[in-house]
Amino acid sequence: MQPPYYAVIFTSKRTNIDLDYQEIAQKMVELAQQQEGYLGIESAREEIGITVSYWKSLEAINLWKRNLDHIQAQRNGIANWYENYTVRIALVEREYSFQKV
Image (cartoon, rainbow, N blue to C red; front, side, top):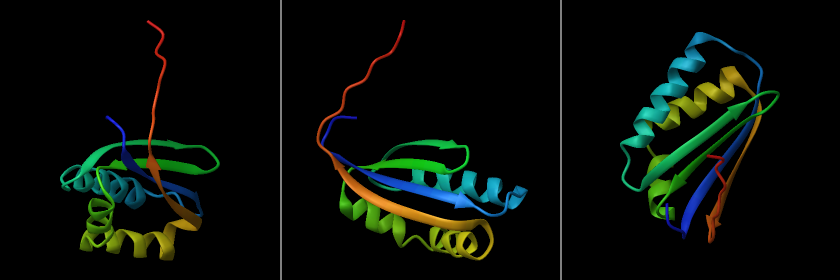
């Protein structure tokens, strides 16, 4: 990915771990990948979950936020899976990385 682009940072603490969560989470990844402006995703979970999705524009993020399946997953999360969550949207202006060969 070449900057600039946007990162949507979703941090959460779950209250309930069940198979429905894993299934819907995977469905949301697959659905996001089909959205115009989607660039990628990274995720990790220990005590808290952190998922960062990358997007070309704020418009692409807003379209994803309004996706009906995504809205239903958010409702399920609030009702069934999350103690709390925070969403942050950041403009990535520069990136660099290291990889051991």
